[in-house]
Picture 1 (cartoon, rainbow, N blue to C red):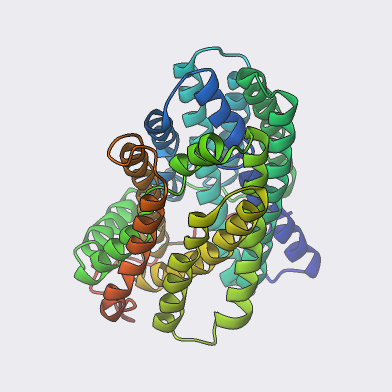
Picture 2 (spheres, helix red, strand yellow; picture 1 turned 90 degrees about the vertical axis):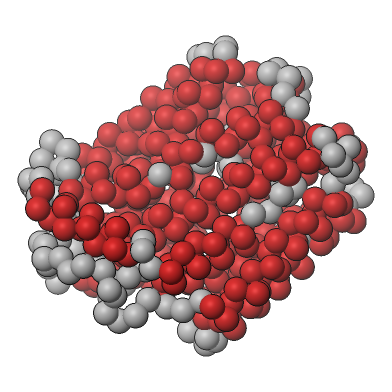
Length: 429
């Protein structure tokens, strides 16, 4: 069982590590940007007949559930479902995800596909938030936070690599049938949250809990106090600026397909190269930067690497150069992302760390989605399908974050948020 309230036996820690990794593996398959990424884009381009701007708008709506992650944490922490804070939410959210993928496999309307994908996003994003809460609490109780996080990110990246290969095979099998490709990918994705739900039933035990209204009010008051902090808003602006990369998503896919001549199936292979680069980037960060350099130095290196990693996109002429460009982009983007995550974690004030961190990650996701819309608008309009100016603009936005680094400061040991009572932890026990 995932039962870490008391001093754990080694097997208990191993089971918890397995479960946390399993949920992140599910994310690596079920997020819209992984297994479904290329089949969905193929469907939107060939069946729904959307241009780059239309696809970017569609993808923005799909990612909205990832922009409201703090809401899932508040629900799980303060409003028990059927008497439980964790297990019942995990069962429900994974059931929603599986059912929504099944719905996608049977609908023939773009609007219905959009609605179903939003539901999958709710299921996967909410499951992520609940499991992260379990992981943080379990890590505090056992001192194994680094083990748990390492297992989670390794599982997610392995799943992303597999998703790229599988998505490529699906697109190659249905080269002229975007509907069939999307249905096949959705049916495969449906299986994973079902497995998570079944193992949740057997592996996770949770203490019964009741809604604590005074505690919820006190935490809400502290949260409002935290967001009055100028220091925190500087971090919000910094994250938004450095993640606003117009041109490196939907517009780039269109450029590679229509101008470079890469097939839909090979575009999915590029997603795999990007994931491979991310694995390398995470290893570089953990082995050479984490715990060895100051946060400001790490962020400086991350932003320089992130901006430079976009430049190989300017010289893509075929498969080989595209492979190298995407692997380089994945590696440098991961280094920059982990550096930004460090800034976000250090900016979180005491007592409301989880909700503030989830809010900062929502800003992170919002910046990426808005940048895709802005880049696609420019690509279809003012730039007349020229990708190079967008790549340079994206690199410039990332590098612009260097100006704000001297202003970044970690949260003080005693934050000025209003004090709250020390509640009993709502944990998976």
